[in-house]
Image 1: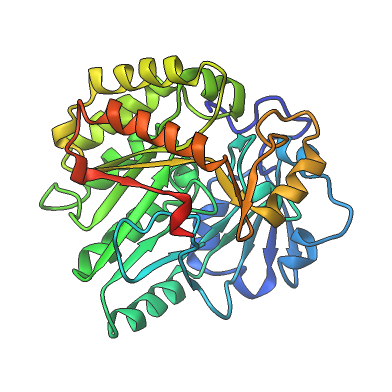
Image 2: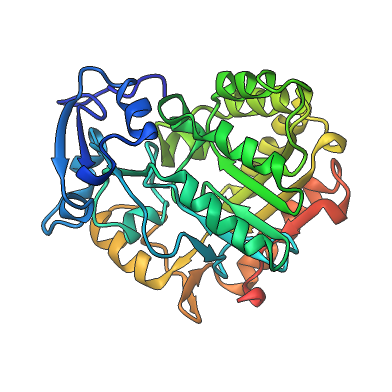
Length: 349
């Protein structure tokens, strides 16, 4: 996505709603400087805007507003069964941002949230404090970009650098930043801002990669595959730990040839030996989210597929799932050691 204002009646974030309590917070002021022309509206609580009845997710998605708020109560959550834990016993995630500037057809956010507006919680310091409390009990593996794409909007927030600095201070903390972005400028700047000129080795950059056919058809506003690959290569060369996520795999009548060409394209440019690891999984989603998404996208080939329901999670039938995973494992085996490939399977539910 090259412009936040492309194809909208208003520009992205033409209106910014701010909770009165955090109007003068340093992160609020930092973000506002990025949008000098935005109309500012003071509110009492973010849910007054975000949770209103009768909202149209897809109209809002064309030109969402930005909501700045304070996160209260619990800030850290245990990882869900549909997510990869990568063998970590203490697997958590946190949401400093709710919603995403991308518009992927299969994204669960459209089934989870009532609004397409982005909510940014400015009190990062409180989230850091809660992580530090957990760290007194045990090591923590923390995903910080599940309910958004943090790197994609970091030019406005500058949160990635803060998370990296926090990560560098805590050796028992491992952070994963999942992204489809090609925002290398942010990563390059962040890396060069350190005196030792190397990123923290307990901070993992995880790129979700999809075949070009699926990027064009189902991942609206996201960078092309080539740009994501280029960004991942730059990150590897700069010393970042890089994970590739071939997840979710999507079924298509020509899925075998599509994924064969896809893997060939990826590893023509990326040396598998330089990767931290690889994630692999088929499309799966909570039954409650899919129910809502099907109402909104009646013509979606992905969402209207006759999935199997296993303990409240929809996914492809076991036979197809096993075939798709086995085929991808075979393709990946030519480029990366088997012990570096982490696979989600329906038996893990």
